[in-house]
Structures are given as C-alpha cells and as structure tokens.
Length: 284
Image (cartoon, rainbow, N blue to C red; front, side, top):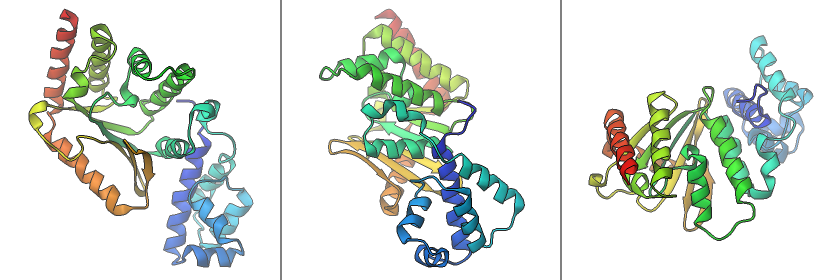
C-alpha cells in the first residue's frame, strides 16, 4: 500500500473521532452546529466523511467539544491536513458510479472485511485471468481493461499487510464453476490457497452439503470499523446498495454471515478442498 494515507481514510478518522467527541459532550448535531454557528448540513457532511476539513474548522470543533488531549489534537490536525485531495480511485472515475465510490471510501478505511458470493469468487480474491474471463462473459465492454485494472488496484490495497482483516466464505459452486477453463481455475484456486496459507485472508469453503441458507441468491460484504458501526454492501438483481444507517438490515446480514461461517468447512478442511480442486483442474 502506498505510504501516503488516502484522503478518504483521513476523513474517516476525523468522522469517527469527531462524532465520538460530540456525543461525549452530550450534543446533538443540530446543537453542535448552532454552537459553532455553522449550517447543520456542513456538520453533517463533515461527520459523513464526505468533505475535507480545514485545521481552523477542526480546532473550532475540538474547542466546542472540549477535546484537550494534546496527542489526539495533533493526530486529528494531521488527519485534517491530509483530508484534502483525490481518492486513490480517481483515475478510474469513468467506470465508477457514485454509490460505488462511496463504498470504496468506506472500504479504504475499514478494519475488517467479511463477505460472501453465491456463484463466483469475490472480486477481492480474483486472479487477473479469472477477472478477464468474467468480463468477457458479458456484453462487450470497451472499458473492461480499465475495470480490471481498478479491481486489481483495489485488491492490492485490501490484501496488503496493513489492510483490513479479510474473511470470506467461498461457495463450492464458485470453486467448481469453470470460469475461463481448467487452467484459469487451477491458478485461481492455487492463489486462494496461497492467501489462506500465508495468513493474508481467512477463507472458508461452503460445501454443497451445507444445504439451503438465507444468502443463496445474494452476495454481500460487511465492513467493520474500530469505533463505528458496520457498513453493508449488497449486490443483487436490483443493483447495489451501501447501507450503514439501517441497523436492522445490517444486523440481519451479520447474522447471515455467522450462519454461513457455522455451515462452512474449517480452515484446514478448506485447504484440503483447495488441494483436491487443484488436482482436479490439473487433470482436466
């Protein structure tokens, strides 16, 4: 991962820290905005991590919230200075929708990433030739190469040693579906095994024998944060949804993931399945 901290990550740090400080002071957003003599919308955008924050405005907020810890103040001032600028994915703006850009902002700042897809290997874990085969299966896309480059850049950040803790449940249907043919699948499964063995991701295979479950038709990802609620990203026939405000919906998918984890094979048994599949794809 690049040594410079992404502006989105700095905004996330500011968002969570300032929200905690405001609530500790016993102020609502409206009360805090009135005390600062700001519009409510300005405060909301800052707490949403949607805008950069000047050091001057930060100091005004810290004064209003009675934050006096010198180390914390220095840390947040550094984050404010780094909150300006473009996100790492800005060069891919042509192929990123606004909702997905919002999700990438959350993903960049997450401490953990849990997910499941019922039919393909999640994009975070795909090899480049598997990705290519996925994009070639649909309608011709003149921007397919750019989308693949974006996915690879995103994967590099997620799987970096300083990235989030990654835990994925991999459906046996995805592991056996020959996307790109046997050689592509052999390399893909070998890559998954390498990630698991080297501790870069916790991978659990969900066997066919697990039977029916609530997520058979929907893929989803849960982003976890040290001092904030989980963010949910759901992909389905109706499109994609990023949600952090509907706590009941987020909780429902947290339950879904726990159900999948219980039904899945152990890490050791998953490695054994990977080995069997690598041998299978080697023979075919």
